[in-house]
Amino acid sequence: MSNFFDDNPDIRFHLETMDLRRVVDLKEDGYAEKETFPFAPVDCADALENYEHVLRIVGEIAGEFVAPRARDVDREGARLENGRVSYARGTREALERLAQADLMGFTLPRKYGGINIPKTVYSMATEIVSRADAALMNLFGLQEIADTISKFGSEEQREKYLPRFCSGEASGAMALTEPDAGSDLQAVRLKAVQGEDGQWRLDGVKRFITNGCADISLVMARSEAGSSSGRGLSLFIYERDERMTIRRIENKLGIHGSPTCEMQFNQAPAELLGQRKMGLIKYTMSLMNGARLGVAAQAVGIAEAAYRAAAKYADERIQFKKPIRQFCAVSELLTDMKVEIEACRTLLYETSRIVDLKEGLEERQEKHPEHKKDLKADLKKYTRYASLLTPMIKARASESANSISYKALQIHGGVGYTKDFDVERFVRDARITNIYEGTTQLQVVAAIGGVMTGAAGEILDEYERDHDLGGVSELADRGRTLRARLEQAVDLVKAERDHVFQELHASRLVEMATDAVMAFLLCADSLQSERKQSVADVFLQGADLRTQANLAYIGSRKRTLLEDQEAILDDES
Image 1 (cartoon, rainbow, N blue to C red):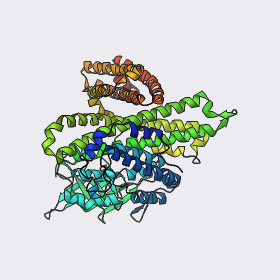
Image 2 (tube, helix red, strand yellow):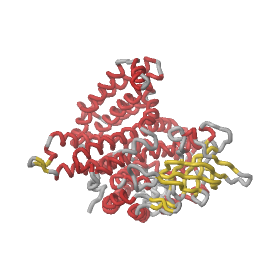
Image 3 (tube, rainbow, N blue to C red):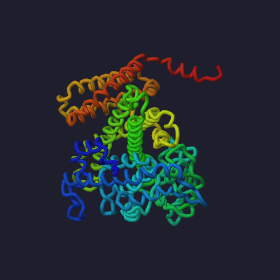
Image 4 (tube, rainbow, N blue to C red):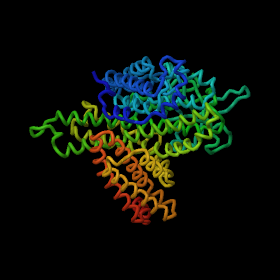
């Protein structure tokens, strides 16, 4: 029997040691539903016990059912026949299992059929599913569609759509990207026109839409005629009918079980979600931040799968009369992979916790406006933290998944390059994670503001206040060295008073901030586990070298670098 929760001591470690008391209290609104719903928790301990039970179910489905079918799903893939998309058999069966286990309304309220579990635990579940089959996560992880309707839709829309998501009857998609509007969503051209009868209708094309064949899609469209900016965009709920045609599905490098569709809307009827003109600046940003957190969890899951495949092969492959794990070159690769996974995981769950606090405070304000003033400062703080940590973990986890999968294939040697082993699939599946839902370069653009304005420093201050790091003082001092270098680098960039210079070094600054935050999180983890002290030690050795190099590079003030780039890339010379 293989259970992807039970066999992962690091996920269990975080579930057991994280302080989720306020997260749970906010999610349960002071345990107000304990008299209404038989499975609603009566206190925090009861809720945590339930979370563990749910994760064990997810782990069992992932390990026993999903993972054994993943290779066949990859080979079969999704298909487009006569205008209709068909999932691979293993995908269909996995979705049925998840729905039967009541796992398709993970974060949704109980009144609509959901199980009302925080995003922190949902990230754990998403990671577990992704380890089994990254392509399935793209369908399981689209629960963010329903969550967006829950946050911003009318009560009539919630009652109409959310129970169908929770039961597994309806699948979801977010239709944002167009042929000429990828990263630049302000360039969306698909039109939404409201008729005299009040009915909105959609006209135009969406491309690269994950699960575009879904029953219910959130579609961003230009609702304000003559507009050209993000202010002219609204978000619409579209239920699939004959007025939308799937023109093609992409023939992709990886995640074959997840169909990526091109959608043609032909006067397709739709409902406005929330208010006009708020589609991009409010609703879609919320939707995409949730999706970015999901991709980060997906990346950690792929990395975990790749590491485990490499570790197993290294134990079994005998060369020169001993397992290749016993060669320092291989054991060092495995150690670096394992340490980076655990560093990404602790940042993933911490980011999820911050997002839970932010969203929980927003909901508490909505339900109890009399407390709005008391919650205002905390909401502002956690919104600021979430805005920094979400792109930070998406960038780091996705880049690490690529690196770790690549190393896993290297450990396999020649056989890893064949389809006889799963590791080649992990390499292909990982490659999309640092592209979709915003490339790593765009995550840097999203995170650099928080780094420059001191949000990273505020977070680190809070970690120092909340944890007595005296028990790991040597590790903590090394973490403080990383922070000092970050602050020095920020001061150097600010002193230049040059936006281009800041842009040039943004990726280095974000990497330094990420290393510093991860270091302090691992120090806090080390207070709970002697083994984690070794993890923190190895991580800090690598982070020390990275921050030294980044600081030296920024400090060189090489203003000629841009000129050098232009000269190198000028093929007319």
